[in-house]
Image (cartoon, rainbow, N blue to C red):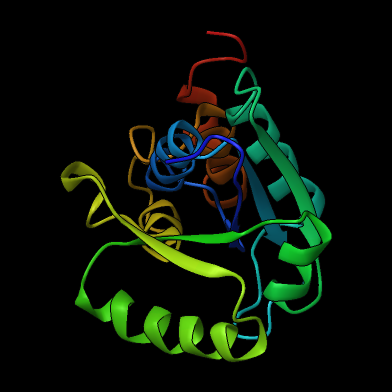
Length: 174
């Protein structure tokens, strides 16, 4: 693939998971630049974390990836793509259930912006079960999410759902 292509990877990232990071970093290896588009005020769901927290988690987890940028938006995804002069919308797919929704969104985006392609990347097998909502549910019931999210997210989820669990997690920088 040409390295001069900018792709956007939009989502609420509430919270960002290792599955998201896998798609983003694999996308960064294929495209010249990946702009992670953080939807500040999603229409379909109410985020657990604030936009500032979600942005911080993403920036922390993606530090050192020079071709990845994090930016927030509250507009049509194709308008966000145009703002960044992106030619591609990068979306991860885990299962056929993802495909149905993402296919419809891709068709709508194509109607609005025929010059911007949607590219689907399959989740790595070890992340095919992983979702932000699943992570939140595990954390809410006291389960460990340390292998499913970046360390800062695991610490924050433990603080939100189980203050005692937060005390058992490794400290910052460990």
